[in-house]
Image 1 (cartoon, one colour):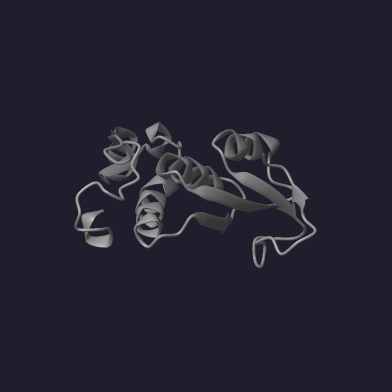
Image 2 (cartoon, rainbow, N blue to C red):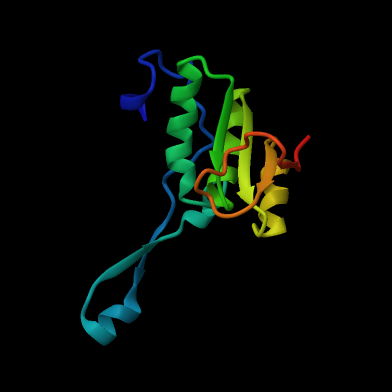
Length: 137
């Protein structure tokens, strides 16, 4: 993460212990196809998604640049990660989600401190511009 964030160690870093998730060997593939394969378990990361790694870097850099409010269109995982890392960094987060996003993901986004807006349609162009349904705060 240091290559993308401030040289001032730790001053802007927003981390929650992401990374170092387990890598497990899939022995079944060796017996059936002679291929050695591994699977990475990102479910044990702080936000239970691989999006944690990139969001930790993005939020740290945003904080370094002086941003106070961050926004992302998301059907779930990126919104959860932004909410978690923005909150840890003391920043506000807005998440625009399609109306058909699973309620459990919306609750997770809001419980981690973000304001969540439900929008019509898909993620393209989903960032709030007014008139959307606010499910945060």
